[in-house]
Image (cartoon, rainbow, N blue to C red):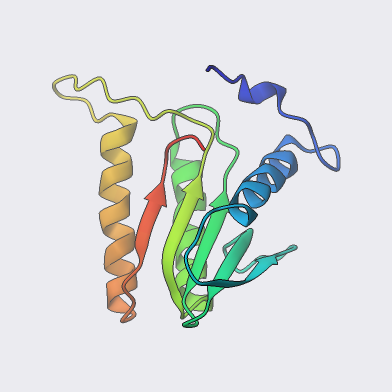
Length: 145
């Protein structure tokens, strides 16, 4: 099924807000073992749109970014900022989903880095940041929900 994300319903006159709401509704309905409490956040959001607290106190969080094409440096910087913020503000985080409405290209052309390769490099960088803080966080996403 092909979805034209540019047709997503706006919320408060913003497609970004509409995408964030969709991600949160899907996160709320995820089948998560031992889930205890779901929290949907407003702005500012400490790096996440929503998160589940599990029975053991662990957190699974979601960040939504309405980036509909290959990411540019400004968008990568926004993702870096979100990851830094969530690692600072959510000390019980152990899963972090980043939802973007974009299939990352992976053409594997010599001399060029695909978006998927850049994504994988960024995930390693972010996991290093988590490790530096004594956290073990599984970073997931980068593919359409």
